[in-house]
Length: 194
Image: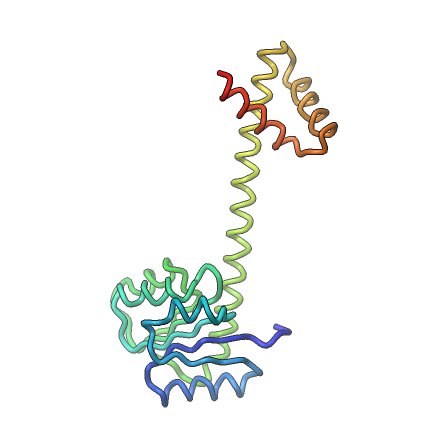
């Protein structure tokens, strides 16, 4: 973490918020903003664009937890949540809502930095996994379109599968396009004509 992290701390109790800020200041150089009112969290997160959101809440309900997690943009940044106690299933709900770290038994100043580091690491790991999954899905969809285009060429031109693919590839190279883009155009055009 070479750049100075921007952190939003969501804590209605001023004394506890200052403890969190002190703990973070002892652990590193961060740009920290305290929000004492979680109701404006979504707009503040959009406006401030923090790198990390730390939420301290004594006893959240499932609705509060999901609302806080979603408002803090867990798919865009790490979210660490400290709770004093947690009812059955709330930790699972928090993780499903995208919270990177869910710490039960309250916020202790000495634990803030390690939890922050864990939340950032976990967020980055899941972000990589989401990216890889999206790329795999895109590649699979492209493969399906290429296979459909090859099948159309094979039927209309009487070519083998290898020859149909070679024709798609040559056309893509001649046009300076990707094979998947040429295949998509062919499938789309055939859909309009058929």
